[in-house]
Picture 1 (cartoon, rainbow, N blue to C red):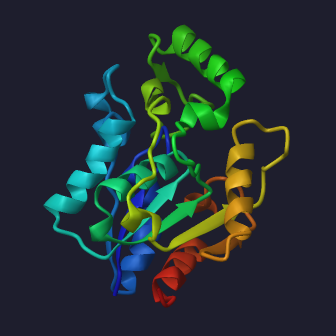
Picture 2: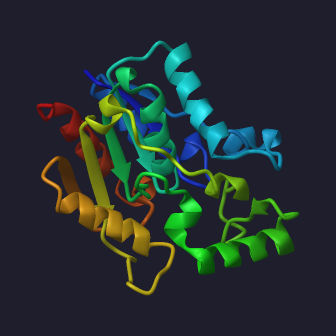
Length: 233
Protein backbone atom coordinates (compact mmCIF):
# COMPACT_ATOMS: atom_id res chain seq x y z
CA UNK A 1 0.00 0.00 0.00
CA UNK A 2 1.11 3.57 -0.69
CA UNK A 3 1.55 6.64 1.49
CA UNK A 4 0.00 9.80 0.05
CA UNK A 5 0.38 13.39 1.17
CA UNK A 6 -2.36 15.36 -0.58
CA UNK A 7 -1.88 19.14 -0.67
CA UNK A 8 -4.78 21.49 -1.29
CA UNK A 9 -4.73 24.56 -3.52
CA UNK A 10 -4.97 28.25 -2.74
CA UNK A 11 -7.84 29.69 -0.66
CA UNK A 12 -8.56 26.20 0.65
CA UNK A 13 -7.53 23.63 3.24
CA UNK A 14 -7.23 19.93 3.92
CA UNK A 15 -11.04 19.74 4.08
CA UNK A 16 -11.10 20.02 0.27
CA UNK A 17 -9.43 16.61 -0.10
CA UNK A 18 -11.59 14.64 2.32
CA UNK A 19 -13.61 12.61 -0.17
CA UNK A 20 -10.63 11.52 -2.26
CA UNK A 21 -8.62 10.75 0.87
CA UNK A 22 -11.42 8.52 2.16
CA UNK A 23 -11.59 6.62 -1.13
CA UNK A 24 -7.86 5.94 -0.94
CA UNK A 25 -8.06 4.86 2.71
CA UNK A 26 -10.77 2.33 1.91
CA UNK A 27 -8.18 0.64 -0.32
CA UNK A 28 -5.69 0.45 2.53
CA UNK A 29 -3.51 3.45 1.68
CA UNK A 30 -2.14 5.83 4.30
CA UNK A 31 -3.25 9.39 3.51
CA UNK A 32 -2.32 12.76 5.03
CA UNK A 33 -4.13 15.99 4.13
CA UNK A 34 -2.26 18.82 5.88
CA UNK A 35 -3.53 22.38 5.79
CA UNK A 36 -1.01 25.09 4.94
CA UNK A 37 -0.41 27.90 7.41
CA UNK A 38 -2.97 30.71 7.30
CA UNK A 39 -5.54 28.75 5.28
CA UNK A 40 -8.55 26.59 6.07
CA UNK A 41 -8.85 25.75 9.76
CA UNK A 42 -5.46 27.40 10.28
CA UNK A 43 -6.74 30.79 9.09
CA UNK A 44 -6.25 32.16 12.61
CA UNK A 45 -2.49 31.92 11.95
CA UNK A 46 -2.63 34.17 8.88
CA UNK A 47 -0.25 37.15 8.86
CA UNK A 48 1.49 39.31 6.24
CA UNK A 49 4.81 37.46 6.40
CA UNK A 50 3.48 34.09 5.23
CA UNK A 51 5.26 33.20 2.01
CA UNK A 52 6.07 30.14 -0.06
CA UNK A 53 8.83 29.19 2.36
CA UNK A 54 6.23 28.95 5.15
CA UNK A 55 4.22 26.44 3.15
CA UNK A 56 7.29 24.49 2.11
CA UNK A 57 8.23 24.11 5.76
CA UNK A 58 4.68 23.04 6.62
CA UNK A 59 5.01 20.00 4.36
CA UNK A 60 8.61 19.21 5.21
CA UNK A 61 7.64 19.12 8.89
CA UNK A 62 4.62 16.88 8.32
CA UNK A 63 6.75 14.37 6.43
CA UNK A 64 9.60 14.47 8.92
CA UNK A 65 7.56 14.44 12.14
CA UNK A 66 5.29 11.67 10.86
CA UNK A 67 8.49 9.89 9.74
CA UNK A 68 7.08 9.23 6.29
CA UNK A 69 9.08 7.59 3.51
CA UNK A 70 8.32 6.58 -0.07
CA UNK A 71 5.72 9.34 -0.17
CA UNK A 72 3.47 10.02 -3.14
CA UNK A 73 3.40 13.81 -2.80
CA UNK A 74 0.39 15.33 -4.55
CA UNK A 75 0.14 19.03 -5.37
CA UNK A 76 -2.98 20.72 -6.71
CA UNK A 77 -3.10 24.10 -8.47
CA UNK A 78 -0.99 26.53 -6.33
CA UNK A 79 0.58 23.71 -4.35
CA UNK A 80 2.38 22.44 -7.44
CA UNK A 81 4.84 25.17 -6.48
CA UNK A 82 5.06 23.86 -2.93
CA UNK A 83 5.65 20.19 -3.72
CA UNK A 84 8.33 21.07 -6.29
CA UNK A 85 10.26 22.93 -3.61
CA UNK A 86 9.68 20.22 -0.99
CA UNK A 87 11.25 17.69 -3.36
CA UNK A 88 14.40 19.82 -3.39
CA UNK A 89 14.57 19.68 0.43
CA UNK A 90 13.79 16.03 1.18
CA UNK A 91 13.92 13.96 -2.03
CA UNK A 92 15.10 10.92 -0.08
CA UNK A 93 11.65 10.65 1.56
CA UNK A 94 9.67 10.84 -1.67
CA UNK A 95 8.67 8.20 -4.22
CA UNK A 96 6.70 10.25 -6.74
CA UNK A 97 5.45 13.78 -7.44
CA UNK A 98 1.89 14.10 -8.73
CA UNK A 99 0.60 17.39 -10.10
CA UNK A 100 -3.19 17.81 -10.35
CA UNK A 101 -4.08 20.72 -12.65
CA UNK A 102 -1.12 22.48 -11.09
CA UNK A 103 1.52 25.10 -11.71
CA UNK A 104 4.90 23.50 -12.40
CA UNK A 105 7.85 25.88 -12.09
CA UNK A 106 11.01 25.74 -14.14
CA UNK A 107 14.33 26.41 -12.45
CA UNK A 108 14.42 29.93 -11.02
CA UNK A 109 10.70 30.65 -11.44
CA UNK A 110 8.24 32.00 -8.90
CA UNK A 111 4.48 31.88 -9.25
CA UNK A 112 4.62 35.57 -10.12
CA UNK A 113 6.95 34.73 -13.00
CA UNK A 114 4.57 32.03 -14.22
CA UNK A 115 1.47 34.24 -14.04
CA UNK A 116 3.16 37.28 -15.59
CA UNK A 117 3.20 41.00 -14.76
CA UNK A 118 -0.36 41.81 -15.88
CA UNK A 119 -1.94 39.16 -13.66
CA UNK A 120 0.29 40.08 -10.75
CA UNK A 121 -0.61 43.77 -11.10
CA UNK A 122 -4.27 42.78 -10.91
CA UNK A 123 -3.68 40.60 -7.84
CA UNK A 124 -1.74 43.35 -6.08
CA UNK A 125 -4.60 45.74 -6.78
CA UNK A 126 -7.13 43.27 -5.35
CA UNK A 127 -4.99 42.80 -2.24
CA UNK A 128 -4.72 46.55 -1.77
CA UNK A 129 -8.46 47.12 -2.17
CA UNK A 130 -9.84 44.14 -0.27
CA UNK A 131 -7.03 42.46 1.68
CA UNK A 132 -5.00 45.06 3.61
CA UNK A 133 -2.30 44.81 0.92
CA UNK A 134 -1.34 41.19 1.69
CA UNK A 135 -4.47 39.00 1.45
CA UNK A 136 -6.27 37.82 -1.69
CA UNK A 137 -9.98 37.17 -1.07
CA UNK A 138 -11.55 34.24 -2.87
CA UNK A 139 -13.79 34.86 -5.86
CA UNK A 140 -16.71 34.33 -5.43
CA UNK A 141 -16.50 35.66 -1.88
CA UNK A 142 -19.34 33.50 -0.56
CA UNK A 143 -17.82 30.12 -1.50
CA UNK A 144 -18.05 27.91 1.61
CA UNK A 145 -14.92 27.43 3.73
CA UNK A 146 -12.73 29.51 1.42
CA UNK A 147 -10.17 31.66 3.21
CA UNK A 148 -8.01 34.52 1.97
CA UNK A 149 -4.69 33.54 0.39
CA UNK A 150 -1.41 35.30 1.33
CA UNK A 151 -0.09 37.28 -1.64
CA UNK A 152 3.56 36.83 -0.64
CA UNK A 153 3.44 33.13 -1.56
CA UNK A 154 3.78 34.24 -5.20
CA UNK A 155 7.21 35.82 -5.05
CA UNK A 156 9.76 33.17 -4.02
CA UNK A 157 11.70 31.64 -6.88
CA UNK A 158 12.34 27.89 -6.77
CA UNK A 159 15.73 26.45 -7.63
CA UNK A 160 15.80 22.98 -9.18
CA UNK A 161 19.28 21.65 -8.49
CA UNK A 162 19.15 18.46 -6.41
CA UNK A 163 19.95 15.48 -8.67
CA UNK A 164 17.84 13.11 -6.62
CA UNK A 165 14.86 15.48 -6.74
CA UNK A 166 15.21 15.93 -10.49
CA UNK A 167 15.17 12.14 -10.93
CA UNK A 168 11.90 11.57 -9.06
CA UNK A 169 9.05 10.08 -11.15
CA UNK A 170 6.38 12.62 -12.02
CA UNK A 171 2.73 12.49 -13.08
CA UNK A 172 0.44 15.24 -14.37
CA UNK A 173 -3.35 14.97 -14.17
CA UNK A 174 -4.92 17.61 -16.42
CA UNK A 175 -8.50 18.80 -16.04
CA UNK A 176 -9.47 19.62 -19.61
CA UNK A 177 -12.50 21.90 -19.11
CA UNK A 178 -12.27 25.65 -18.55
CA UNK A 179 -8.86 26.08 -20.14
CA UNK A 180 -9.65 28.76 -22.71
CA UNK A 181 -6.44 30.15 -24.28
CA UNK A 182 -7.26 33.70 -23.17
CA UNK A 183 -7.58 32.73 -19.49
CA UNK A 184 -4.37 34.08 -17.92
CA UNK A 185 -4.77 32.09 -14.69
CA UNK A 186 -5.43 28.72 -16.34
CA UNK A 187 -3.15 29.05 -19.39
CA UNK A 188 0.07 28.29 -17.45
CA UNK A 189 -1.53 25.09 -16.13
CA UNK A 190 -2.45 24.04 -19.68
CA UNK A 191 1.11 24.80 -20.77
CA UNK A 192 2.50 22.67 -17.93
CA UNK A 193 0.17 19.85 -18.99
CA UNK A 194 1.39 20.09 -22.59
CA UNK A 195 5.00 19.87 -21.46
CA UNK A 196 4.23 16.81 -19.35
CA UNK A 197 2.27 15.15 -22.16
CA UNK A 198 5.23 15.60 -24.50
CA UNK A 199 7.82 14.32 -22.03
CA UNK A 200 8.19 10.51 -21.99
CA UNK A 201 9.58 10.60 -18.45
CA UNK A 202 6.19 11.83 -17.14
CA UNK A 203 2.97 9.89 -16.71
CA UNK A 204 0.07 11.90 -18.07
CA UNK A 205 -3.70 11.57 -17.51
CA UNK A 206 -6.73 13.69 -18.27
CA UNK A 207 -10.05 14.24 -16.51
CA UNK A 208 -12.98 15.71 -18.45
CA UNK A 209 -13.89 18.20 -15.76
CA UNK A 210 -13.08 21.67 -14.50
CA UNK A 211 -10.43 22.89 -12.12
CA UNK A 212 -11.83 21.35 -8.90
CA UNK A 213 -11.81 17.57 -9.52
CA UNK A 214 -11.80 16.91 -5.75
CA UNK A 215 -15.44 17.98 -5.83
CA UNK A 216 -16.59 17.11 -9.36
CA UNK A 217 -14.88 13.73 -9.98
CA UNK A 218 -13.51 12.44 -6.67
CA UNK A 219 -13.81 8.73 -7.49
CA UNK A 220 -12.09 9.08 -10.88
CA UNK A 221 -9.37 11.21 -9.32
CA UNK A 222 -8.78 8.69 -6.54
CA UNK A 223 -8.58 5.91 -9.12
CA UNK A 224 -5.92 7.84 -11.04
CA UNK A 225 -3.89 8.45 -7.89
CA UNK A 226 -4.08 4.78 -7.03
CA UNK A 227 -3.11 3.80 -10.57
CA UNK A 228 -0.03 5.99 -10.32
CA UNK A 229 1.07 4.17 -7.19
CA UNK A 230 0.60 0.82 -8.95
CA UNK A 231 2.79 1.76 -11.94
CA UNK A 232 6.37 0.44 -11.87
CA UNK A 233 8.86 3.16 -11.01
